Structures are given as C-alpha cells and as structure tokens.
Image (cartoon, rainbow, N blue to C red; front, side, top):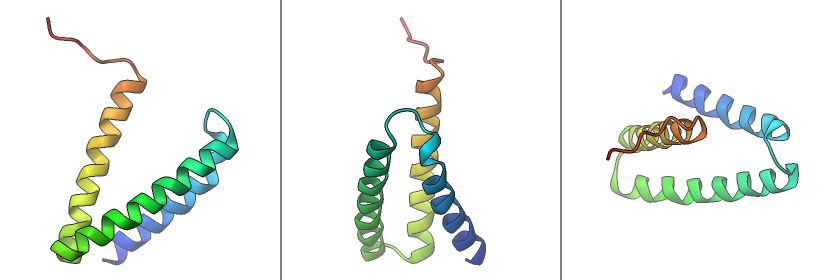
Length: 83
C-alpha cells in the first residue's frame, strides 16, 4: 500500500506542477484539473462504499489505464476505421 500511496501522491503533484506546460490557457487547465479532482474524490468515495480499499484502487487504476490508452490513440490519430 505504501507503493500505491507514493505513486498516487507523486502523480498528483507532478500533474499539478506540469499544468503550465499543457496546451491552452493555464487558467482553464487549472480549473479543469480542479473539476477532475472533485469528480475523482466523489467517485472514489462511491467505490469505497461498495468495495474494499484495494479493490477500489484496482478498479480506478484500470479505468485510468483504459482512458489513458483511448486518449493516447486519439491524440496520435492512430484510429483505424473498420469498413
């Protein structure tokens, strides 16, 4: 669990630090980061009601991995349309 805590803390603060390097307005990016943080807080609280802590973290990590892959594919325009 300490590795889990360290990874989450490092990622959270690193993402906040690198907000100024994202494309677009720094103010808009900061606002969206705050909205995403609030949504994540409520989502994790909801997961903790139904699952144990480890299971909730595993579900959230899998969800983040899937969304990250979709984002990566969409940003690199590697999407192939089946005809």
